[in-house]
Every structure is written in structure tokens, then in C-alpha cells.
Length: 433
Image: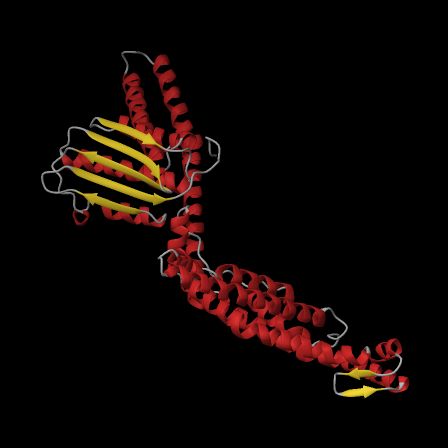
């Protein structure tokens, strides 16, 4: 995994033979300098923001600012993760989840509920009020001592009389200043080690606090694996539909035509004509059943034209008069359209078998980042998932795409089946292969 490699590479360069000659010491110095300066600026910014929020809180105007300060850790944590990547090249994964639906409200709701947001805030306070003085002090001490020694001779030559080395000793002799400069050059490789160790320790702290924990990683992997399974399932359904449509169905059509031609060649009053007619009728019934099977697997109208047309086609095939109304911004993701379509077909099948309804309506709309599909009927009601009406399996199917199924079916009716699925419109073309 990239995480483990990145964590190991924080300490790895310090133990390598060519560490002093590599770019690792300079990266460590740049890392601590960047974290120190950004921490100082962050400290000033947080103090000023907190002061302003406290003053304005009296007028209730500062309360939104105080709430916004809780999210101050998000950009700071992102910056810290990027700096660690600059230091050792290892990526620190972002622990934050992607909102289920677009919009600022959904993003804020998710961020305030995440543990990672509060870890980011805690580390931000630590960086602003504790870590940055340590970072700058280490960089200053480690680089200032060799720097002062190396600069002793040039400063003495410029002054002509004396130079104060590290503010503790006055040097008047150029040979002594040259020896101090040589000592500074010899000391410079040695101070690279404590500099790199401090930088590595700070980067390890960033990984410990700002990287996703084991449980978060498992949840994220489960979410990603479920999305992959849904996509693979839909792709397999479309493949089976294509194979049946282009293979078995076409051969049955050809068989029906051959049987029809054979009937023309057979004597009209002979037994062969009757058997051929029976065979042709059986082939036609098998073909009709196969078409229904293909339509149940993944209807071509859904793939070619989208959810409204597919639901209208399902309504036309219903034995009960069904009116459909849809208001969608365009095509939706394939799993969402498939789940919405099969929710409608299952609801129509249930009302045809159990409701005793005379009419039904199917309405679909897209509002607030959610697809909502409602199926209403004027039947007798009393739909119960425990009685094997297919609603339990339908709820499981909707849950796969993070949707919800709501059924309102009091005794005496009417029945309302509502499906809500978070999604975003896609820019894909009208046809899908």
C-alpha cells in the first residue's frame, strides 16, 4: 500500500549511506521552514479570527464565523498532507468522504459529522500554538551555528578588526576565523541528521493524526467495492441482454420464419401442415417469453432513451391504466436509472396482482441532488413486505445505490411507493452499449 511505503520513507533516507550527499537534508530543512512559517501565520490568523468572532458574538453575528472556524482544519490538514509528500514522496490519504449528493448543505452536514474534521481541527490548533516554534527553533539552531562559523572569516575581513562569533566569542585573528569556518563546514553534514530526524518525527505525527484510521479505511474500501460490484453487475446484465437479443432471439425469429415457409410447401390438408403450424405457434410463444425475459433483465429502451421512456413503456404493458410524468434534467447514472426502472416495474406488478386498483400514476423528478420516483394507485392498500409482495427485495435493490424506499399503504388505500436515490446527472450520450 502507498501509505505504508510513505511512512517508511520518512525515516528511510536518514539510515542510507549517501544521506548527507542527497537532497533529503535540504528537503527536511525546507519542510520545517514551511511548517514553521505557515504555523506562525496560522497562529496569527486564528487569534484574530477568534477575537473577531468573540466580539461579534455579542450581536449574534459572530456565531456563523465561530461555526466556520471549526472547519479551519480542512485546508490546513490538506496543506500538511501535501508538505509530507514534498518531504518523502509518500502520499497521505485524505480521510474525508465524498458527499452522497451535490450542494453546500450536504457537504457541510457530512463534514460536521465526520471524526476526521475534528482531528483536522485538533491538529490545526497543535500546529498553530505548539509545533511552529519548535519547527523554526530547530531550523534556526541547526543552520545558524554552522552558518555563523562559516561566515566568521568573511565578516572579519569586511570589518577589519573583529567579529563576534555566535555572540559568545570575539575573534581578531584571520587564521582562527578560518579554522572556525572549517569547523563549520565539518559540522554542516552532522547537523543534517537531527534536522532530518525532527522533520521525520513531525511527518510521522501528521500521518498518525491526519491519515484515515483502520476503520475509516475499511469503510472506504467497502464503499468503493460496493460501487465496483454495482457497476460490474449492471455491465453483466447489459452483456446478457445483448447476448440474448442478438443471439437466441434472432435464431428464434429465423426458426419461426423457416417454419412458416415450410408450412407453405406442405400440403394444406395433410398432417404435416398441422404439425408445422403447432411448431410455429410454440416457437412464437417461446420468442414472446424470451422478449419478456430480456426486457426484465435490462430493457433496451432504458439503455437507449432513459428512465422516462422506459417507465412509459412499462406503463403501456400494464393491464391497469397508468399515467407517467417525469421532470428530469437529463440522463442519470446507469445504476440509478436501472434501480428506478425496476422499482417502477415491481410496483406496477404488485398493484396489478394485489391492489385491485383501477388507475395508477408514476411521477419522477430530480430535486436537491436526488431522484424521486413515486407510484400511486387507487387500490385497496394493505401492502406488506412480510407477505412476499417483493418490496423487501426492492428495498435491498434500492439500498445498493444508497437509496431509500418508503411505502404508505393503509388498509383501504391508496398505496404510495416512493423511491429516493442520491445522484448527479451525467453527460453521457443517449445510447449506451
